[in-house]
Amino acid sequence: MRLRRCAHLLFEPREALQFDLESLAAGGDGLHTELSLLALAPHRQQEIPVSPGDVALLAAVPCTAWSDFDALAAVHGAAPLQDLLARGLLVGDDAVSADAVQDQRLREANWRTVSAVQHYLGRWNGVRSGDDLQRAGYVTLGELIAKLGEPPPAAQSRAAADARLALPPPRTTDFDELLQRRATCRNFDAAAALTQDELATMLHRVFGAQGTLNLEGGGATTVLKRNSPSGGGLHPTGAYLIVQRVSGLAAGLYHYRPVEHALEPMREMTIADTADLASRSVAAQAYFAAAPVLVALAVRFPRSFWKYRNHAKAYRVAALDVGHLSQTLYLSATDLGLGAFVTAAVNEVEIEQAFGLDPLVEGVLAVCGFGARAARRVADEFDPNGRIWREDGSRASG
Image (tube, rainbow, N blue to C red):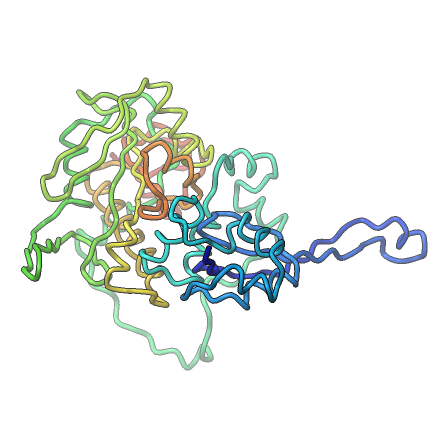
């Protein structure tokens, strides 16, 4: 058998404070620092405790070339090698082991190690941040300040006030009014359904192909034009829909095809089941889960990394792609008189499982949603200029 180190691996020394009764009895502060060493292995999608000896052994085994097991065992011993092989930090040349398969797929996806660790070990499963914030009293800005103190200033000063150069008043158009009405919606009408026309308009504006270009070069390569910029013009982000309330459309899961401007049904679900998935997807943020349509923004990493191979900026470009699309979604929804939201506080694992996505190929970075606003404000929204809500909580605009 031959071995090699897994392709993507980082080590983190982590300290945790523990209560120490002996220290307290001896007049100390009663605290003990406990140090642990963790291997961060994205192909395992988990943190694995290791020892300094494990780290030294892993550093001695190449990740780009295969090494003979017996030759390594003669130097390091067979048992430590078998232990690291069982934990997936070393992989064998047998293509049937799950660790070897996952490691090979990450290699083929052209990930940069730091980015792979950040993405795969930052995914949530079963987190209920909405409930957690409620219990901790971190919901309103006043509660945050009371617990955490004042935040850093809203803007930096890089010159004295008398040195600032006043600019002429900005020109204003209808677009400025649209921007003023753009705000995150936390008050969706839980009974209102979207029309199919509203859904189609939103999907085409935000995710639809406004034009295509086929480049011939060993095979037909289709380049899309969307209404948002994308790194390398690749547009790797797909739209996966949790449909709760759309007139004439069954509740359930759908995938949007941007070139054909069509929905692909993936699973029909009961209204109760879609509501449950919506809540779990946005980590129990109830004000977002009430939207009639939620869209999971899933990046197809091989499409982006086809160009940006093992690139220090590749993952940042993928995140920017999602950000651009969410802003276009906000503006489109505002123009149609709808509310919108985007959140990264999502349970990626549960969303990927629901849609049958392979996280090594297609990973969720955020969830957006849109729909009709409620008639009255219940949850706080940031609307300092009163373009959406009056002081009494009633609607100020349509």
